[in-house]
Image (tube, rainbow, N blue to C red; front, top):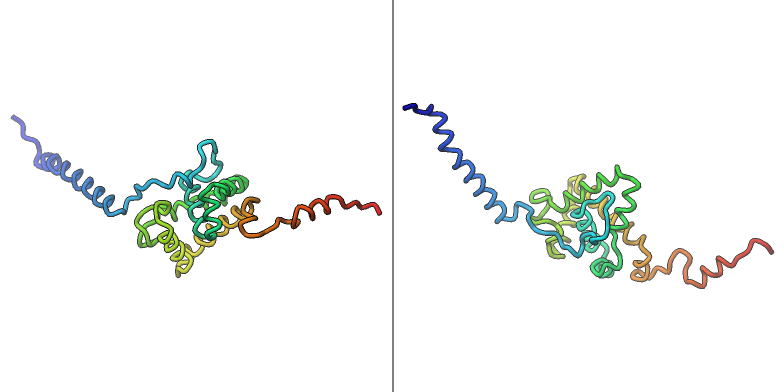
Length: 195
């Protein structure tokens, strides 16, 4: 009869305990909301027929959610009803500048999955209610950390450019377009250089 070495027997005896402790820790962290298991809002994600160039589906949903909160109630209605899709326009723009797209994608991932103490939340950004999303964005805007302020400025800039670049957003803000009314456009196109 051969006896196993005491250390090998001890390791075999402790191995299940380590797994159990690990699984208990993961379960406790999940229950406390520290593990981002929430599903993003499918209404904010990319349409099924859209292929993304730069943004991931999660970053796409995060940008739409942030734009809806940052740009005010009229913008929120247009984004929620899909009449304006700032993330689609931003993805098209960022396809031309992939270096910027990679940085923005990382920033959106940090906004979506970052947890306390980096951001005042324990769940993914897209699963939070509107006021909680506002609190996260306000903490980034007013932070003493340059990184958080830069994250806010970058997300707000891209969201605003993408939203207000869509012609469907013009009516919501009372902007008649670059040439004013349709009559002004027709008059400008009828101009002739000949006297």
